[in-house]
Image (cartoon, rainbow, N blue to C red; front, side, top):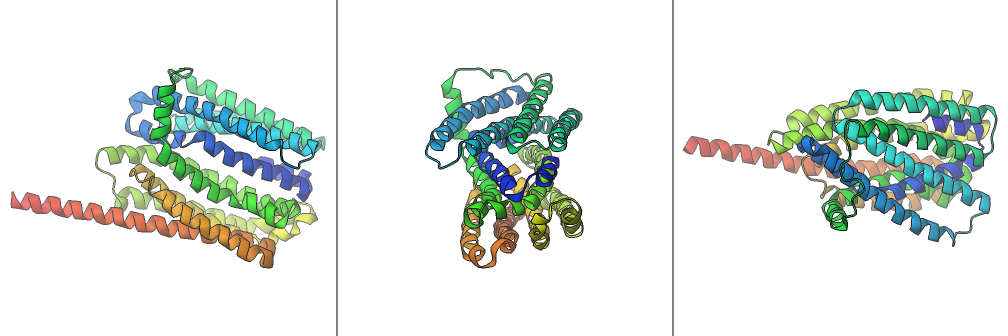
Length: 401
């Protein structure tokens, strides 16, 4: 989030739009390299913490192999794109930085699944301080976009190095460099449902980063991303909460004790509360952020804050319910809801953006998220009804005995 504030302050909308669009595309690519390995590892470690080293090593190794494959495909694709050399260099640097950041996030997920929150806090605090010091230097010196991208790459490399150095001290990652391809293909097969769920869910969240520049141009994308990236920063708390609750709920599920009226409602209350706090911060603080921090060329951002607030609430509620479904082993059903929500969202983008422009974007993303939330609610109600039926059958059998 700090990076967004500095870049939006330093760069005009067109250059910031290029930077943010490159980050969105690179982030989507990391999802294919991750292939659900991290979510699978999170759930498996929650149920079997004694196997954490082997589980995490397999996830990281699989992610390394797919990162090489995805990056090779991207390099070949770039040969046919009509990009200027300077823009291509910037995009390539951001690509590498985003993948490094993804590996660092993988280490943080391991900390949460192992309940090593003190280590996670230290890693985040140290690397964030270094990150802000380096990026502030670029801001003070008014460096051009290429050098800003290089500084961003350096901070992500430091973050990943520090995160993994701390991780291996408590989780040695046994067999990380194993050349047994059969294990890798077994990991692929067992992670397919998690991969589909993760890719569809996160691509849905990143559709605006691709379709806004495609339909409205990089200048409009820069204005939109100056606010949208703040929303994405807030949603990091949703991801953190998910990775905190999923291992615990997965363990309860493995013991047959996970129920919505206890764990589910508690998680929904936490997620919903944070969503409301975020929504209020956008409505109240958004116009102040534009007036006193950004260049006047970002003034159209003031028309988007109410839509961002609605999206934040819907997205947090969806994250809470989604975490409950993952812990229940229902990740294979979530992609159906996500696919339908994605189709609705894409249709609304092409239908509304040509007529209503930038002001329609946050409301389109909110509509798609509400569709996704409705699907999750239906699945959760069916799970809850099934649990009630099982409990009722158990009582009847006990009474008969």
